[in-house]
Image (tube, rainbow, N blue to C red):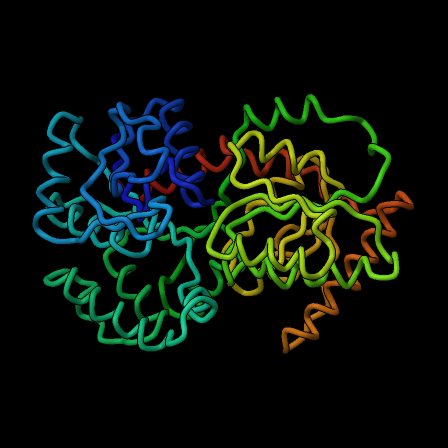
Length: 408
């Protein structure tokens, strides 16, 4: 098969969805399929990475962020023409796989309609939770998104839905899909409950088999002595809650209640604020801001940590780093009960609170408890079955079954 993937961001850009596209492409090609990835071109300092890769069909774009890492392609006739030209020298497409919720989705559905192709849509984003965490007027923005969707999909099935909330937006997109998948059971059930699609296939975003084996093979048998080593990995932006995490660390280490070293991996709009907070709260000596790391190096840091900390609540559709860490036997400190249920064993769950001050205090108490368990050698252990279930090869095999069902 020739699968044409449409994404909102270039596959070599930073982010979990982009890692997923890269791995899916590689493992589909290993299975003998052809893959083309359509996304906005890159404008940041790493714009020439894989610049000559024939599978990347880069479209003209508009940089979205100050670091020019992310960009937008306006979905219209000119972009449609660019897609068609880019695919002229590729084999005839058999299926469209939409891996985005915005301009990538619009372009993918438009292309599928022109060619009469089935669409498999992997839904990655909690649009409602993301907008509420990052914008001052989320309801106005989602109304605007629905208006944009109706214009971009004019004449297609998704244009007919006149709803104005985030679930209506996703429902309208899914009207053009043959199959919908989600990276976790909890998000799949939420999509079904909100009428997005009758049956959503659960296919985890997996870990690179080869990188897993290399990193696991070099992992020490026992814990290194010294302070408790915590790692926080992700985009430093409000929905991920890095600042409340650092506030909780400051609370937990006060009066020597917790001896820890913290590594914060990633970049984003709150990086400068996070540095200032660490200085102000007197924990700068304990917290190391590493910045973004290559994929395998990030896996090594998770494998070497005593615990991974993930602080987002209600935003993650999978919580991929929790599963990656679990593959190496690294437990997680979690704030989201959905992710805790999905990963199963091997975590500490922070007590649920309604206001942020109480959440920070609850997280601080959990950090202290986890630190004590780690030092005493009684930390919870992740389920070893995850190491086989979470491999990208297993996820790709499951996705190929969905492709075959869609094309039949």
